[in-house]
Amino acid sequence: MANVENGVIQFTCEHCKISLTVDDFLAGVSAPCPSCGKPTKAPDQRTEGGAPDVSSGLKSQQQVVRPPVGQRLEKDRDWDTGRPRNLPPQVRSETQREREEVAVVTKILVLGVIVLVGLLAAAYYANQAFNS
Image (tube, rainbow, N blue to C red):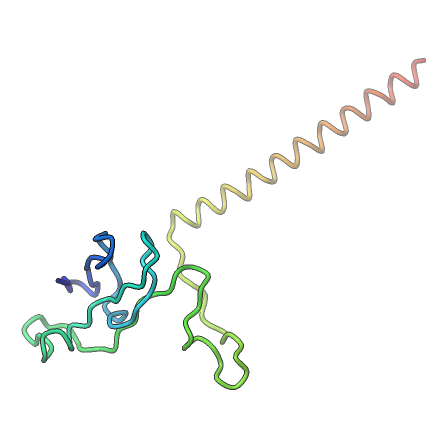
């Protein structure tokens, strides 16, 4: 049983019974479950109950499940060349963006420490050679 509310669909994987949430425009298409990896289809309310629920105030739209990160669906490919289409950039959460920034700053700091230690070691050995 799916729960459609505020533009999202909440349902459970039919294989591992984990709770999943997708945007309401992503219903009706199968994608691998992030937990068990087996194909799971987000329910499409238009086909399950016959007519769409008019009392809920939700618009009836064609819905699709998001592919796993880094994987593109067949519809994202150009039919003539088979190459991936240029898609708009993916929206990243604020937490993910902050983690990426922290990782970059950490790498820069580690590299700076390595360079500083190398310079100090070179200065020390140059001083030792000069004094001998």
